[in-house]
Image (cartoon, rainbow, N blue to C red; front, side, top):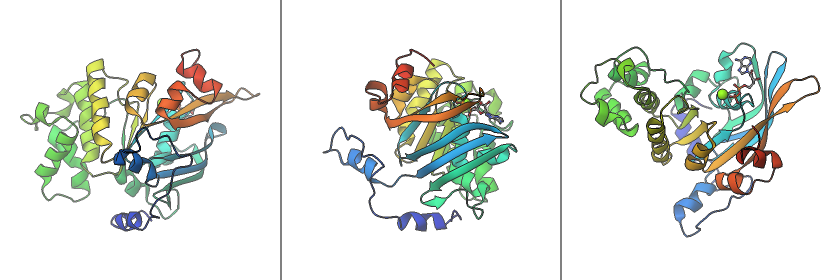
Length: 297
Ligand SMILES: Nc1ncnc2c1ncn2[C@@H]1O[C@H](COP(=O)(O)OP(=O)(O)O)[C@@H](O)[C@H]1O
Ligand SMILES: [Mg+2]
């Protein structure tokens, strides 16, 4: 169960080695990191997941694993359920009254939707960054210190704040003005602050829903660099409508599309999930090919 300190025990007792559903190509088998990356158990195992809003089936029957300490990208046209899907990983759909999630999501082999799991605990381990940076109208310091304070991890608070800001590649830009209001930062800085706020509670997974789509190219590039840095320690899942971004940052890419039913109902489906390089160069499904070559979508 996902109860604080038990998590480490749970991870320690996982089966030693299990390959992913399909063994992905490893570019260089002499590179131990590349080999290890595909041999650790997946962080999430999603099986037959569907989401409805009222009577609208928005996402149907998704089955996929999320690889540990890698970047996984979700791409696809607007309305195909990318945001709906990523919200399933930290039970954020629980906060939408009309949303109903069926199927199974295992997180380190525990049922994320078990009635005994506290969604608030889940969201400490599985942080989220949104499209629009959403710092609190508080100082830079207080934004980052917020989580540790709530969790009563107040020891070494200055150190925690500094470490999170360093990890988010923001420290050098803000170290002399930690007491200024976070809203005075640029959009790109605000987004890195939101990432720092996430990191300050020492999460396991970071979910990002179009984290750079409201940012200028330089800030976007900073966020992409950060994803590269962070994946050594964290599992990252990112929604992006920017295919070049997925190609640049992600090891694995899932392409979603929209099926339109006879009644006109639009339902998101997972079309293809594979190594990013495969999705962009030799996809198996013509719908993926059409999308990545820009012929539709
Ligand atoms: N809070 C919500 N309430 C009702 N319907 C929603 C809600 N969020 C998303 N939807 C619907 O679910 C479908 C998928 O939306 P979304 O997950 O936002 O797609 P994407 O992120 O790929 O653009 C759309 O038809 C959208 O209208
Ligand atoms: Mg979305």
